[in-house]
Length: 149
Image: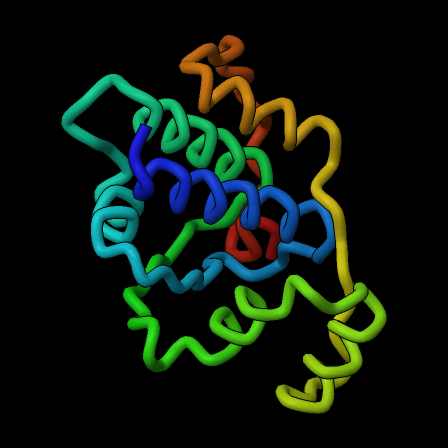
């Protein structure tokens, strides 16, 4: 496995966790990554291999279909990604201190909070990283607003 595989795993698990904890009433989820290869894979929705990254992209496609969103990946260089830089350098803080410093440095309303990925999503990530995917379960698609009016 490569660093890009792990970057993709983090991005997909982040999307899965976001979908579990946020109403997904927007058609697109914008997600930044410094890894240009990950951004390219996500934009194409495919890779030229059948390795880990292909399994992760398949899991992302399942999540996108299940939660009816489209991932819009963008490249964000490390020098401009201040929040990710802050988070990656704050492992020494307790959860409470981390949230306090995050809120004081990057204030938002409602304030930041920590969420954990579900057991199902952790299992999905482990399956994808192990190149063992369960059969694709087609979810019924929700009618668009145009169809319901």
